[in-house]
Image (cartoon, rainbow, N blue to C red):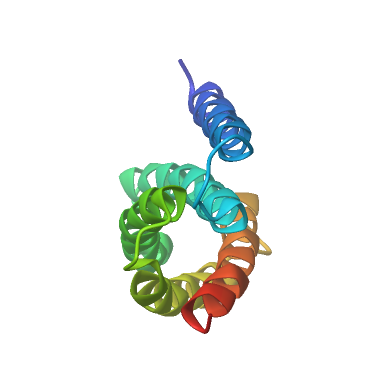
Length: 140
């Protein structure tokens, strides 16, 4: 399996997860579907970006090292955000405030590379969308 096949597979898996989460939330009560969708997209695009960063690092290109670190943090935080948003957990607003900061920092780091790496651009765009949802949720 080459790198493109791997990235395509990760992207398809992320898309399937997003669709399942969104479909489930249409039938549940208490969840925050827009936060779930944004966090899901952020995690999926982040996984693809991180895989790309790792590939670059493995070839000796260290220019994406800081990007890999910020995306790794993003994936951890947005995975938790996704879970709490789906549950409609009482601590969602507090985590949304933390997630807002993480998303903004990751977006800024990925924007540095977006012209050369579409994976970074896609991650940055997902971060911007998630940050907007986090801002609404944290201030609700």
